[in-house]
Image 1 (cartoon, rainbow, N blue to C red):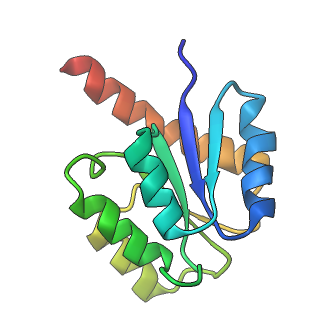
Image 2 (cartoon, one colour):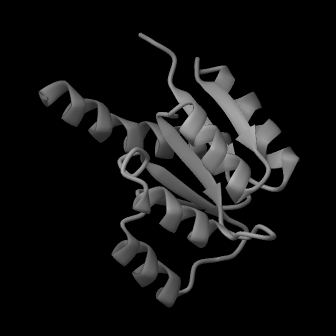
Length: 132
């Protein structure tokens, strides 16, 4: 099995380090980006298997970053899990469903929750690519 590449885009370096600590034990390769622009550049340099994307970031928030990912033909099929410190309101859940976000995790999260969400999102992607 080849290592899966996770790109964690979050302005809180502690979250990136936490994701690294949790997911490296399971054989994942984790890269971090401290802003939406940095994350987009990292994605274009080397396509990740999945993106963990913080919503509340300065300069360009996660929703704008997500929109730019989905507007880029080379990046649009990469699964995205949204991370946020806020509890999701009904309006956010509806907006997420309409935007096609793959999943949503509210901070703080447990290692088990993070592992399960990543595995669940990656599994359908692996199955569909195996069918091609």
